[in-house]
Image (tube, rainbow, N blue to C red; front, side):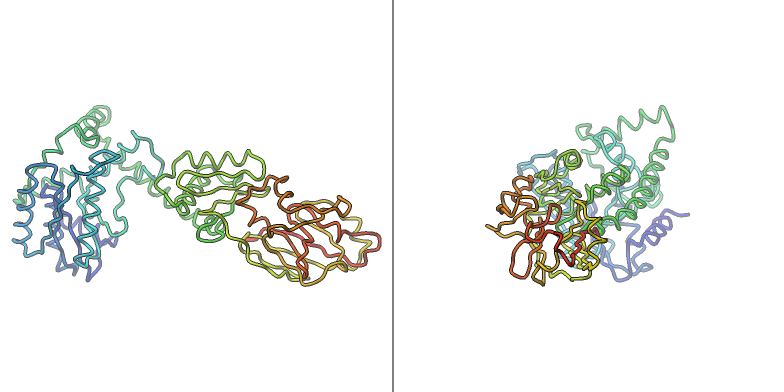
Length: 459
């Protein structure tokens, strides 16, 4: 199979280019990008797409200007439009490495050029050797299964048609087709981590295993397959735990029963989704959430990246920002009411056989028994209001401020909007789910009908 045929089949297999697309090719003038340019230009008619050539000048090397002219001349010889993007990397303040800053700026420039030229795709020239080097670099720095996937074949608008060929195949293709190219002197400098991996580490590893590249490629492919499987599993779980776009609730039972690998992925995915600064989400964030499992109810965490975590008696809540008050839910009596914001449902039943039920009354959590005839219907579930009072069962009718009750129960101030109360038609609090009922509606010997209220999880 020819080089061009191999790349074409790869493009079709992964749906990298569709008929009618405009592809912006990032071309530096080196052998990789020049082979990409010639392959894509030869496939334009067959695959029915148009091509734009873009050179990004980082202005870090004196020869870059000549390289831009070289690429421009080649594009002209192929009757292709040419775009030059000039950057000022050296003059910018930077927190990371020059290598990383240049990479980020390059992709930003390519995206700008794509938009300016009404492009659909950005084609870059990463090949299998780049892929292997990336996996090794991530292993050295510390990575996860997801990191072992290496360089993706496509990522958003970015496609990598050469991710199916090795550097040696590229050089052979250039030689056999008399394709001229330039050599980037910075690729020979061991000042950059990737270059040291390519020039020093990989040759050393090949002394132990001459087929080390194939071994790393197999590992990467298996990591990709495992990641796809885990992504399939986590999709339904994420929806199960999602309350709203910026809010998730994970029951303790799920936290404890999930395999640790899947639990880690789900929590990190949630944090990345809801954090105002997702780039700051780190392994530390995951460990902090796990620490909530060992803490008592009411614990609050301000997580790296800006997300907020709370622990209550039944689970862990992760939010993008301070929670808004609950909507007011009118409870169906008798019947079931879905409290979607809390991932709960309220089941109510009117029991006339009082003697039968009295013997079963207990202080079981989330199940309450109220004297139905002392309640003014309809009843509602909502957030507590400032200054409200409540007469907890067992205090002989004495009332306490809801605020004081929440302080006693170690409910963080910021979380109290999600700590619901049930009120009657007069607005009087008759029950605090997860706590107790009001002394005023307790069941006595004179009770003729009982209102059973049960709080349940729902999916």
